[in-house]
Length: 73
Image 1: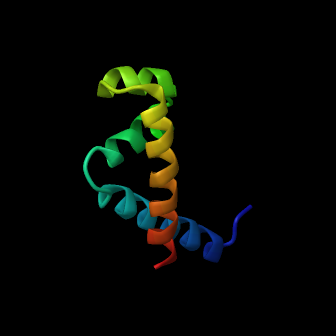
Image 2: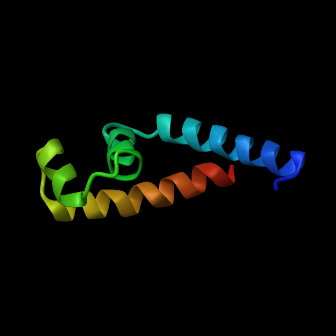
């Protein structure tokens, strides 16, 4: 069972992550939602966004770094 402090920290983390995702440029936020929340494969995401699989993989890598830096601020 989680303590009240753990629940508050978890909620704060989710709030900050959601804000960071919403502040991503261009289609990056949509890609995050597709891959992680929509549980869409890289191949399907590429088809939806009209690009190749390699472009999605590269974008995902860059987005992870950007989100990591945003969460550290």
